[in-house]
Image (tube, rainbow, N blue to C red; front, side, top):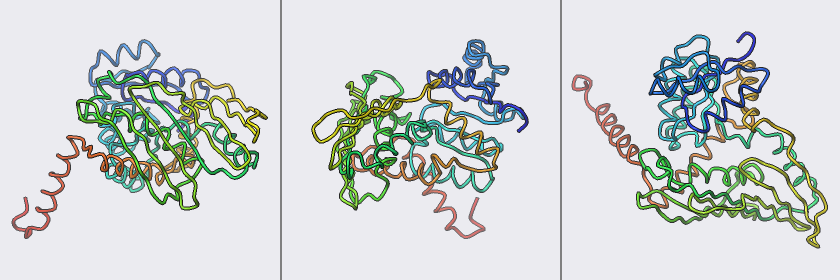
Length: 348
């Protein structure tokens, strides 16, 4: 990679637009190309954000030798196929959350990334924010004593968004919104989880519209997590300790952390540093990893992406939610296994 890292974007939705606008304000990268399955959408996007190239297929973008990093901003159901195609063309990938639709897909992408030596990162933006370090330092300072309980809430009134209602697109609150409270808990309380309990309500299409999850840790800590696509929440994350508590404003894009003592008096507040959108940190981390010939970002390593997907899988299993394409994949895998068990002369 010589000079500025040239970014290609797959997808032309709202998040792709935020990323494009962010990249255009960064100094070490350049917005170079965009791809859509509909060429006209790519052309409109390119005109709006100043992309040099606009492609009518994702593979065309992946084949462009001038693209240094591809940001994937398609629906959850498409992440696996899109990322796999890019990696097979030796293109570094930064894929939006949720990383994939399930853990099996995540494991396959990670295997392929490491086998081919191609960078693969998950765009869980809160993991990369400098404000996360501040939050960890405040909690770790002992100012609220020993942290014992955590709550995290994230909800938006977005239940009418077609993508979120559609099981074929891996819709539902969990993969779109619920990943933030879950990551918040994992970032601050770790992953030594002893037990997970949960509940959800369903849309008429069969995906979850709101859910509540409780993580019980081996050391006695408890995290209560709520997410919804039918109600508006305060977006707060609260860490309760033996001497006080701390309130994080907006777990979806950290704004501040306020500290309260045992008398419920605010004794400190730490605010988010100035930023473009917050997306710039994951881009910077990805570029740094690529230049260092690393296949993952330390901020969100492959092991953590896989861990999150396994937890999401376990929750969906408890709720009885299976995406239609997962049934097809399961049948296909079963047929492959049967084929492999046949004598060699009978295999196709």
